[in-house]
Length: 518
Length: 121
Image 1 (cartoon, chains in turn yellow, cyan):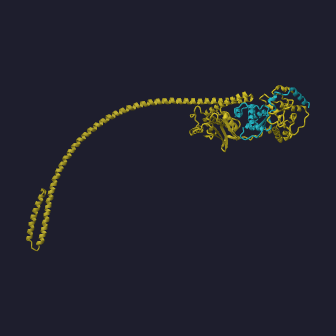
Image 2 (cartoon, helix red, strand yellow):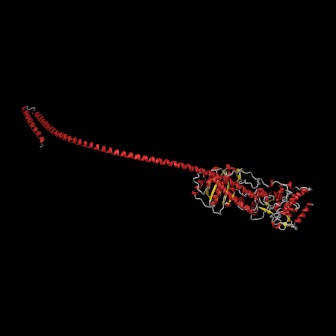
Image 3 (cartoon, one colour):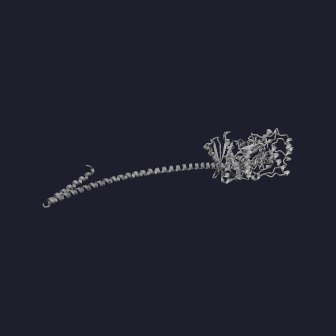
C-alpha cells in the first residue's frame, strides 16, 4: 500500500468503525418494526459516509502533494529563467559588439570601394573623353574623306559623261563622213577599207553610247523619223564585232519612234554582242521579230553557253528596272547594266531563258507606245518619172562612180515605151508581144552573156524573152505611151532621139575617145 | 520603194556593210554600170527591203546605175546585192555588150559612116 493511501485507509477504517458502532447502536435502540429498514438504511448511509470520508481524505492528501510539487516546480522554473536571462544578456552583449565590429568593417570596406570606384570612374571618364575626342576626329576625317570622294566621284562621272558625249558626237560625224566617202569612192578596194573603218567606228560609237548611258549623260543621236524594224535590226547588228554571224528573221513593217530608236538599237546591240561573244565563233545568232498585242518581241537566240539558273537570275536582276546602281558594275561586263538602264528609260521588258537552239535566248519587248506603222510602199516603176533624153550629153559614163545623171538617159533609151523612136533603127520594137520572142532567134536569151554580132562587128541587140515580157507588162499599163508616134521631120528632134540611141549602144565603151566619133 | 534622198547622207541607222554582210566586192563580174536588170519574180515577205525594192524597180529593165540611184546606195554595194539576186535566179541581167567584145570594137570610121548615113535619113 502506497504511503499516500495510508491515511485514506485509516480514515476509512475509523469512519467505518464509528459509523458501524453508531449503526449497531441505532439498530439496537430502534424498535423491531423499523429495525431491518433502519439496519439497511443506516448500513448504506454508513458505507456512503465512510466512502465520502475516504474520498475526502484522499483528495486532501492529493491536494497537499500537488501543492508541494507545484512549489518545487516553480522554484525550478524561476532558476531556469534567471539562468536564461543572464545567458541572453551575455549573448546580447556579444551580438552588439559583433555588430559594431561588422559595421565598422563594412564602413571601411565601403569607403575603400567607393574611393576605388571613384578612381575607376574618373579613369574611365577620362578614357571615354579621350576616345570620344579620337572618334570625333575620326568621324570628321571620314566625313571629309567621304565628301571628297563623293565630289571626286561626281566629277569623274561628269567627266566621263562629257567625254562620252563628245565621243558620241565624234563617232556620229565620223559615220556620216564615212558614209559620204563610201558614196564618193567607187573603187572596191577603197570601199572595202571604208566599210571596215565604218564598222570599227560604229563599234566605238556603241562603246561611247554605253558609257554615256551608264553615266547618265544625254542620250545619243535622236532620229527625226520613225525607223523601220529592219533598219533597227541592221543598225543594232552593225554595232557589234561579229555582225556577220547574225541572221535576221523579220517580216514586220513596224517602225520604232525616232526618240526611242537609238535606245532600242543600242540595247539590242548589247544583247547581240552578248550572244555573239558567248557562243562559238562560228555559230550563228538568230534574231526573230514577233508582233504581240502588247507590242513587239525581239528574240535573240544563240547556240553557245547555257546559262545556269543562277546566271539567268543574275542577268535578269542586272537588267531589271530596280537595280540601277553603279556599285554592282564589274569592269568588263557593261552590257547588261546598259540594257537595264535603257530598258528603264524606254519601258522595255527584257527576259532571259534557255534557248531551244542550245544556248541562251534573250527576249526584249517593245511596248506599243514606241511603235508606229509605216505606210505600205507603192510600186516604184509606175511612178518613175520619164526624163527627156539629153542630146548634148557626150561623155561616156562608164568608169565614173557618180554616173547617175549620165545613166538615166542611157537606160531610158532601152525602154521603148519611154523613147520608142530611137530604138527603131537598131531592131524594130515588137508591137505585139506575142510576135516578139518568136521573131528572135532562141540564142538571144535573157541572160545577156550571149550577144550576137553582125558582120560589121556591131552588136545586134535582139530582145530577150524577159525583156519582151517586161515590155508587154509596160504596154499593158501605158497604152498611150506605146501609141505609134508620128515620125517627126524636125531634124533637132531626130538628132536627140538618135543621140540617146547612140549612148545606149556605146554606154559601156572602155574607149573614151570614141565620144569624138559623132 | 524609192527613197528620195541625197545619196551619201547619213540619215539611216543601218550601215552599208550590214546590207552586204561585210562584203565589199562582188565575186561575179556580171554587172557593170549599164547592165540591164529585169526581175524574174515577185518579192517575197521576209526579203531584205533593198532586194524588194530592186525587184519592184526592175519589173521594167533597169540599169544598175539607175537602181543604185533609186536606192541611194553606192554602185558597188548594189552590185553585190544584184549578184546575190542573180545567184538565186530572182533577176536576170543583160549586157549591152560584154567586155570580151570591147576588144574588137567596130572601126570608128564605120561608125562615123553609119552616123552620117543615119543623119541623112
